[in-house]
Length: 316
Ligand SMILES: Nc1ncnc2c1ncn2[C@@H]1O[C@H](COP(=O)(O)OP(=O)(O)OP(=O)(O)O)[C@@H](O)[C@H]1O
Ligand SMILES: O=P(O)(O)OC[C@H]1O[C@](O)(CO)[C@@H](O)[C@@H]1O
Ligand SMILES: [Mg+2]
Image 1 (cartoon, protein in one colour):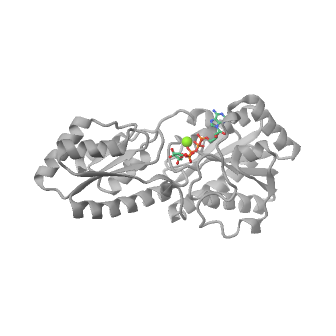
Image 2 (cartoon, protein in one colour):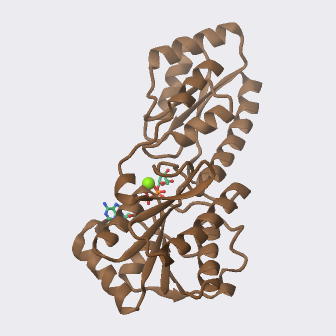
Image 3 (tube, rainbow, N blue to C red):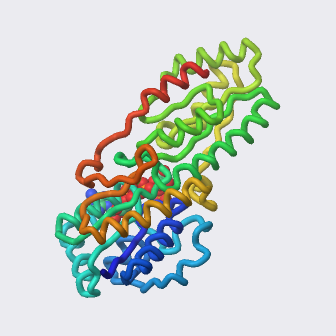
């Protein structure tokens, strides 16, 4: 087979490890392998590159994606998707692997519906993809956030301050939730667990009166203005507060071992599934086993984390 791979949406640590596994597995199994530059953008602009085993040397430990990535809003339109199909067919490509998040999955599903053999791999720091326990990049980003929280606690407790830390995740609270548990946060505010401001302020007031030296609040991005919240907490609870927005630092960096293994396993598995004729499916890991699920079931299916949110209340 001729198999092409692209990375799409926000880059995630471990995407390169997945590309390497795809290329090396593909070649070992007698396929011809191609990379497409800059996600769906390069697919539309016919930017394919042949990939030999040596071309993916030294990639395992490098963050970001060597194939580049993009957000291409017009890819939602069927005539635009048809251009992509034409480019793939004109090059004689038999199958496509898309590495990305929930948005990229929608593009992959569209290509499958247009009868092009397509399979997707979850590559996003957000961990917002149903059908897998974890996405490639999530654990590395989580480690980066936990390191930041540990540092912020040092300075917060030195000054007796409350520290608000805004993390990424878009509509998913997983990064905030997991990082909050690892960092011993008093409060974790996410789209799934919105703020009760009165309760937050009264609890912080109590903690301040008890003489606690610090408080940590982890918040998913786009919930509210964290700097304004810090000012309000300082005034109303008496616990002096500061906010830190971690931003793009969370997306970069060398993938940790967990993401390298996950990416290597998923990449090799995706090639094997394509050779079996699988299409319109995404690869996932569940209870440490590689699985596939239909893309049509995965899209728009939120993850539930009730048990972990209950845990925070006990540990506060
Ligand atoms: N409904 C859709 N139909 C076809 N293609 C889509 C659709 N939604 C998104 N895409 C394509 O997927 C690309 C990536 O989507 P998006 O920006 O949501 O990132 P993602 O894959 O979810 O990754 P991340 O959330 O980690 O950044 C979009 O720029 C677009 O090209
Ligand atoms: O790089 P951009 O387009 O600003 O996207 C930022 C978004 O990408 C992510 O980092 C990954 O999806 C989100 O957490 C964040 O909302
Ligand atoms: Mg997404």
